Length: 132
Ligand SMILES: [Zn+2]
Image (tube, rainbow, N blue to C red; front, side):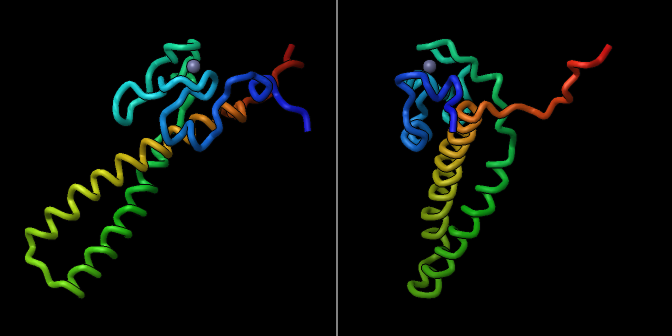
């Protein structure tokens, strides 16, 4: 299988470390995020334009459902076994839920952008070479 142009570039980080630490998919510097879950406009190291990639809202809905199911299961298990007062549930599950959603959203958005860069994914286009 032939490698495309971006896969031949040197200095590209591996996909998982890049997604975990918010590394630029081309140069590997920690420039992918401008805010906790918002991408930078472009890489400050190599100038790669991150705004050309569109990861959409898919990860947000999907992760919220997964995190919600996991947290609910944990909360029910704690309630069934320990019977803590309600304020213990609030102190436990609110920060855990927010942290889990934000953390997993950041990693999944980075993962999608990195894979989009690696695979040169684009929207479908109709080939118009022979239009005349
Ligand atoms: Zn870069």
